[in-house]
Image (cartoon, rainbow, N blue to C red):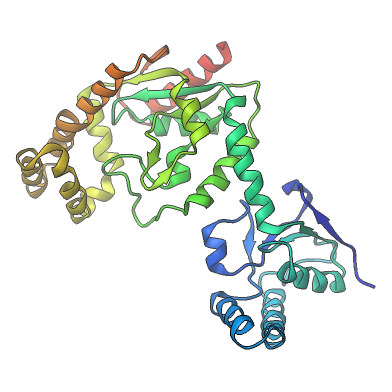
Length: 351
């Protein structure tokens, strides 16, 4: 007789040694439970093959062929990713709807002697929890928006403060995008919308509602990722803290922070083509000349003066922000950023 298999609809990650997503790699890439490890019982090609066979040949043939694939794949996982799992290993397993794929994995685990839990309803249970949570959780927290002109190191300040315990929603980190014209992260694609939402939900549900939550000012899109409506509504009505720094300091910081652009200036071509529609050929051609001359401080200064600062001023004039505090950062080096982060933490304690 095998070890028990339990079915759960709510779970605590700390109760399990590993969360195993047995869906295909394509399904996993689209979205998954944060922290889950992908151990597909059917790979992408096999998953498509079985689906086609089920419809065009017969359910019996599909199940027989699928069973052979599943047995081989689970055997491979046992000999590789699970080779060091001891007799007390306790996994949580899920598939799309908590059906045959997760049950096949769970049954073999049970036969081995591992106490295994299966998510009732599978990934769809997780997705439903994410949607409900993203609709209800934002209103449970006091959000405070960190504002400031481009180049005031807002993201760096928030990350430094988060490392010291401040509750921070790092939208740019979750979206793999800096939220600006030059925002795409080098060699790091943005996640699928659903995966972004899963990680955002995980972030929110671990916060203490008794403490404020800080978040950088963003539009309702970070690159191609949409900020969920309830969170966006909460952001628009939130109090603010502003970060200030001089133009020279911002130029110097941005030249350091965007060194990947300086190293590969060809990355600018599609970005500058896009901004022509907003600023016109004359302005953008002046930017191109600065790039051609490798005058990076001049290029950054021009983009701030011509584009980013006017956009910030226009947005600020159209909204009546309730500003709680202004933090003057100064040099925008590591020391100044840590100092600003500590000021933010001290301010949070005073609320």
